[in-house]
Length: 403
Image 1: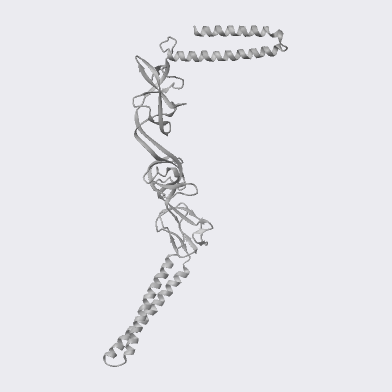
Image 2 (image 1 turned 90 degrees about the vertical axis):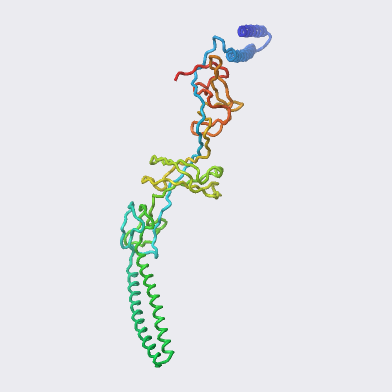
């Protein structure tokens, strides 16, 4: 009846306006403009009435749930359960090694005589890598040895003189000055021999230094020297020999300053190396105590296990655990909607032998992938509407989609 009355009023109003418009045509100079104005007014009234009709129909449908015209909405539901929930901070980092050796000569640059390795070789700690020119060092050792032999001969003679002088002194022959002089000569030669022995050790060590060995075990990652060239450890800005030990690898990254209270030594971490399709669970080994003033971040290191396929400077995707709850309520983020009052979801509740939609205002927490934590507003056991929730309203009849 209400809709019929509105339509009748609309018809009468339209007729009157047309009649009035037609009656005044003879009194005005521009009848076409008058008719257009009248038409615009009628269209405005018609739109207003149409909107009022639609609003009333929607409100009646919501309130009159027992009407034969009410059609139950087909939805999917799922029981809300308490579950473990975790939130991660996603960052990128680089793989590096604790043991990267840039080999250099111990006694200064030297000319290369022999090379015993090639790039990519696995070497052991102490293994001979290259041989430098040792001709001068060998001559130094020989000279030191001969000098020592001379001193030993002189010492033997000085000891004999001292012994003879001591025997004569006991028989009252000779002077005390002669005895003391002979004794001092022996002691002086003994000191010279001791120094000569040390000089031989130095010369031998210098000779051994011409054998360039590996400081760490690992793979020869760089080899930029050839026989006949001078080996100094660095050629320009490039290392001449670089050895990488992949047994002790780690991932390093920079963490924004605002996470300094959440990420610390011992924090759980998930490392993903996409290039080799490897995932590791680890923890923060070290976290810098200072903030980088340039980028407002701090550095952390995460140990990773040995893997022959892992290479230094590989890209790593790192997930730092900064929040977890053992009995959290979490739902699919797509089921959460927003209006002027805040965030809400729809649940299905029993009303006699029927199911009806109920709007539940909620407070949300962290997001992990497709899950969002619900801090309040939902309880375990609530029947969350997970399908068909987009176009339903409070109190709408529901029918459950068969699984």
